[in-house]
Each structure stands twice: as C-alpha cells, then as structure tokens.
Length: 181
Image (cartoon, rainbow, N blue to C red; front, side, top):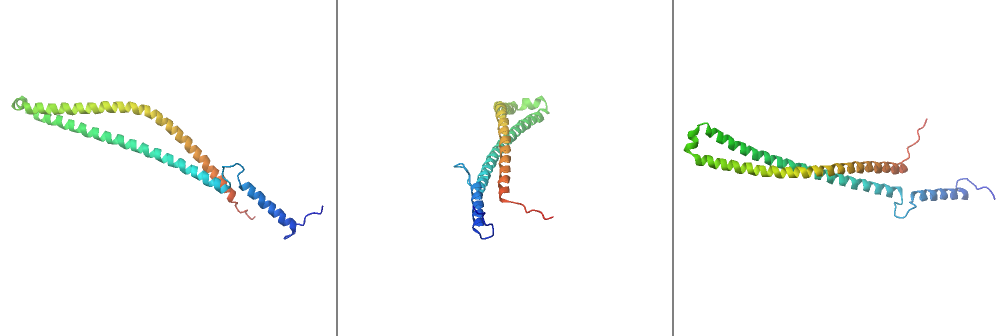
C-alpha cells in the first residue's frame, strides 16, 4: 500500500482532519445515557446543582433569622411586663413613705394595687413557665440544629467540589496561549 499524501488539500490530509474532528466529537459526547452530552451541558448541570444548594442554605439561614427575631420579640415583651411590675411596686413604695396613716386612710387603694401586682406577677410567672418549657424544647432542637449545621457544612463542601468541577469543565474550553520566549 502506498503512503498517504500529507500535502494540504490531498485526500490523506482531509481524512486525517475528519478523523480528528470525529475524535473530538466523541470526547465531547457523554457515553452514558441520561448524563450531560457535552462539557457545556455538564457545566450547566453542575451550576444548577450549585444554585440549588445555595438556595437551600439561604432558606435555612432565613429560618434561623426568623427564630432569632421571634426570641428577641419575646424577650422585649418580658422586659416590658417586668418594667410594669417594677413601676407598680415603686408606686406602692412611694405611697408607703407617708407611713401607716396612708394605708389606714385608703386601704382599698392599696388592696387594689396589691391585687394588680399579684395578677401581673402571676401572669409573668405563667409566661416564664411557658418559656422554660420552650427553652427545654429548644435545647432538644439545638441538638437537631447542630446536626443541621453539620449537614450544611457537608453541603458546602459538596458545593465546593461542584465548583471545582465547573473549573475543570471550563478548562476544556479554555487553552491559555503559549508564552513566546
């Protein structure tokens, strides 16, 4: 058999070029059905996974923020109730500065104020008892949250790997120019 003619435009050069193009197409196509067909498809799929992972982390972060805001709101309400109780006690204390005659002159007023104080303290105690139960539930929840953070850490590790895959895929599209010495 005669050697192939490798001159530009010859039959051997054209067949060699067509063979090279066919090889490139084969490497760009995925051999497994259902997987991305080209590096671009692979890149798009990987970016989509990264986007979904970030979306999940964003929703988790927003839920944590909402929980923190709810807790802050409860703490503010407690502070306001305690301030009201303190104000009432100060009012009674100021009236008692007049001595026993203040109580003997108007025992009904003191009785009313003491009832009001009793109601406010009782209400606050009920709220505190409820918050104690919630705190115990939150302790259990905190353990679950620690596990969630562990899973989030794993998710971000996976996202980092997927981003590395994106870089590798992009490297297939980008060939740096050789430096001229």
